[in-house]
Image (cartoon, rainbow, N blue to C red; front, top):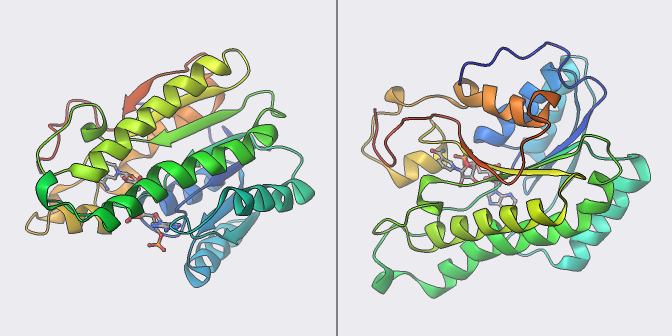
Length: 251
Ligand code: NDP
């Protein structure tokens, strides 16, 4: 994507990122901060979140962090977390649902049911609980943007992608339903990052040369565009951070 964001694109915005401790989510949090946003970081590992928050503060922006294990969290825990955030934060201008679990890459007949459940819990259920809990804060913004993270296998099923593909189809569905329900009140869209150099990608494609992949930093233009006002009229859409890239194949 050829997009040249203004340096102050996200000035005074408050943006929450899930899975902000590593990979694409960490890069998105740092990038949003560099464009003026205050960040709320969610993740399951305190030490990693502290490091990201420190890096953001070192660059002069504010960052708060909260631990939430999405593999085990309940709707009540998400409501409690939203109440804690609301006590310190007047509104949310953006939420990036980025945390994700890959699960087993193997045929459906071999998918382990417990791993299937874990993938659905992190990618679908916990993402839904958090969305429900955070919606009131997002609706207080006059330019709220809710962004989900999809995948090419969330639009076209492919052998061996089992629970992950099913969870990303569910993600696309959640996005479409919410976009229609909140028309004119909240933008709701999906990003498909495309193959990106992270630990999830390495575990899905262990023999691939990571140097041939885009880095999280390379794909940030779309992440910025969807959080800022330049995409204000877009809702209910699923965007590719690497348009034209063939799914599942290193280039
Ligand atoms: P990483 O594995 O590098 O990062 C995943 C993030 O999610 C980490 O911050 C991780 O936390 C967090 N997370 C995982 N499980 C939990 C949990 N139980 N509770 C809370 N947080 C959790 O993945 P990527 O950066 O590659 O992926 C980011 C998103 O992009 C995912 O939704 C993925 O499906 C999607 N995607 C990625 C592609 C790629 O090529 N990389 C391609 C298409 C889609 P921790 O640091 O504790 O592990």
